Length: 120
Image 1 (tube, rainbow, N blue to C red):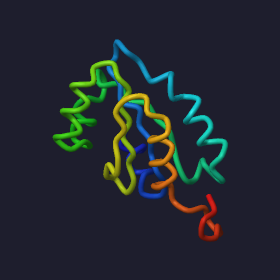
Image 2 (cartoon, rainbow, N blue to C red):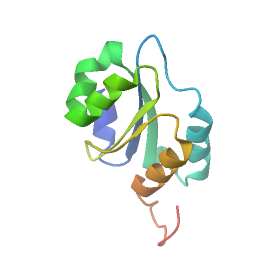
Image 3 (cartoon, rainbow, N blue to C red):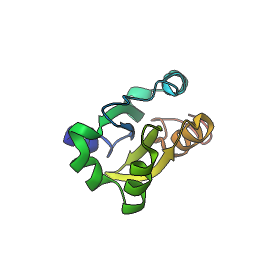
């Protein structure tokens, strides 16, 4: 967990936070796969991870604001994503909202080395 958060200093980290009994969000996996394929040098600019509340509840709780924790608790089995950059949550997505997830990832992914303005 600490290595994942430490890597957010150089890149955007997208964490699929889920309950043990529900598992990671399968609905948005194609969206995340598309982001990875469409993002130049994605491995160095963004990463996608899954966090089980059963195993990482305390760590996830420390990362999220009180409002985000409350939203996560209310969601039950609904998808919940935290976008982490520089060790802090910069955005969250509640529910299977692929357009919102895509736009937030694009907005927060660091620019590729040597890329001009407007390039991904």
